[in-house]
Length: 196
Length: 280
Image (tube, rainbow over all chains, first blue to last red; front, side, top):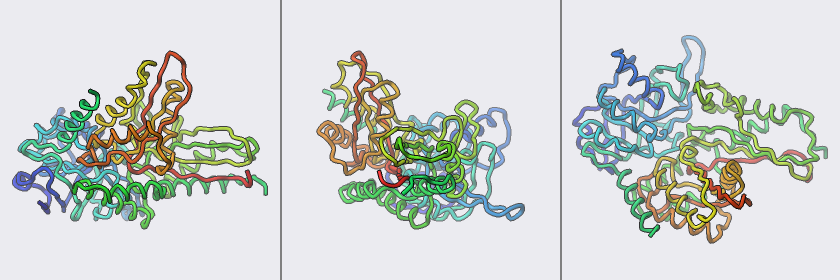
């Protein structure tokens, strides 16, 4: 099945998705990788308010390559290249992130380990083709704003307006089905057989 | 023809070389990906391969880096003993990296390993990484291989037992299984066997520079077939091609050791070379 979703996402939007479905997203997405995840969790711990909302949000595991044009008030950021980063690095920080905030979709590549339980009834994982950064940049229509630029360009939180961002493959759905885990388990079995 | 070159021309050429490596893949890599797309039967894997091919075309047409992870810069330089430059080549390469970072642009990826502070221009302590090899002749050949972290992080090195040569294949397979879709398959696998702890890793990295259409020997072919039987597929979503090629490089080692290094490369096997100087 193919779905076109508009942000912010509601739980109904994602509960109908099944692993293997194709999704396109329009609206606003936020980039966050290692350092941004760590800061989001740290602020939650301290009871501090985030400078952006994660309610119904789509988090994109991405450290984009940006270019600043113009100066002063006319200064604006332009996306040069913005494909997904390896989601595996965010595996441990994802369950606490989903507990603290109602993030409804995570876009990344390569899948995550041991997260499907924390995603059940809460969030979907959408796989975007790794390395396809020129393609992704075409679908990002505007850089709305940037937070935490002190973390460096790749680690900052970029708020992006996208149109028909995809095709994204539902890698982990809200019912606990995880394509990456299935492929990995099968590969482990094949390897065990080969070793015999 | 004199083999002398001005510092400015050299810096310009290296910055242009970086642009080429970031925007265009070598023909042999594109050809291998095309063949894989034709062969693949699983629709999800096919869709991923099509996206990759489309991305390659877009990057070239728009003149933008094909991946936002523009990597850290690894240089391999073959310096002819009779090549004359008259300036500090290493400093000039660093300058070219700074220039290319600003003008292409490239993502600033170089950080201090402990403070994690980003230098902002892709240079830093020991970065760019430049490997020098002295060769006979009047030429200087420079190859740049921008290396992304997704695949580099999944690489592995093991000091194996000397009696374990029969287990090398399994070590490669275990490394590929544990990496899954994270290093952006279809992969190229560089395997370095022998030498020493550091030499094995260097050999593995050099093996990634081999053209993908270089015929594989029996051992390489055997590893490739086993890797592809795992079914991990393009991006780890399942499929018949997990790796495009396996290249092994060896060096003699101590009788008591067997160092084995596996350097994983994503589908974007980026590298480009330029030669300075006249006749050999």
